[in-house]
Image 1 (cartoon, rainbow, N blue to C red):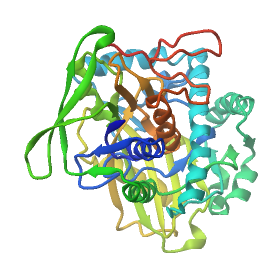
Image 2: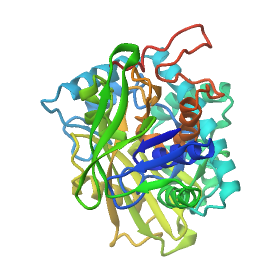
Image 3: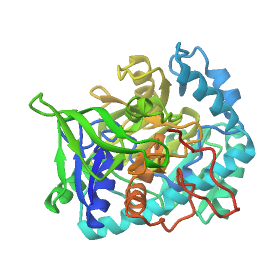
Length: 438
């Protein structure tokens, strides 16, 4: 079967790899000149299965109110005259109940653990080098209230089979001695030894190169302008896509099946088809610093809860990422937010890096209100979704690609996850929160 994958971030590239492994003839369409040039370019680097709580949780509304009007707040919500933003915000609030949060955590952990195992198998199979470390993820807290609230989520993670251990401040510094300078401010933490970190850009490009060698056709600098459909109801299908190719020519490409993996940019392409995805772009920031004193820089991947930052050592670089700005599709850098990242990182590790020459970046995370992505079918018989992974694209990427390849091939993936447009059986329910219309 001929399959066209739209997008070549970690989600699209992994989808293409596994579709090719399943025996399909695969073409990838990407508007950028190479793979992983947008949201997968410079994220925080964490494979954070056990620290994958959704942004929507019982504590979130009060925190958001506290952050309103603060330009350097971890979550900056700029109200705009956009119906989608308001609908998304209301649904986000609905997801903040304890019951919905627990259910969403179960979904996220299921696909994330499946994805980590898939990544480990891929790493062994392909030998791709991407500055990966398997030293776990350490989450530290500087506010007692935040640490106390974390205990419930950590307990749920352990019930789901994730070894996320709540630990003392002394344990935090024992695991990562580079934090000794702020020991007096740390109130506790949690540590998951099985979590990992690595450079998603390097991995995605390595996987794309392997996929090309295996016969996948990557068409870079090619912009999708429209999906062409025919039929209605149960007979509705996509017959082709209109694109502007690298030479500026308008062309129509045809295939038997199509996989939408364009993150935040999935929404405007699918809306004319009557598919209204509840995805809003969340502008996430990162800063990359050259490590000048390796002994003073962390080697365990960290999450700084108070500032909502993640820190990962990538070879001779330190990547620090986080904060979120809901402000449409602009990727313009807000230097107030950039400087806040550098200020906090310098405070944590004053002698570790060259803080005078940071590389700042911003990417649009495709956020669903629940943090549960759309993976599965649509009402169009040959159109499939693999999008909406929010802040966890790297964590869920390889497993999402493997799962969608199974679904396109007519099989149900072997994991307990609420796939879009498919029955969900563990409690006898059919999924409703991730349904799509057409």
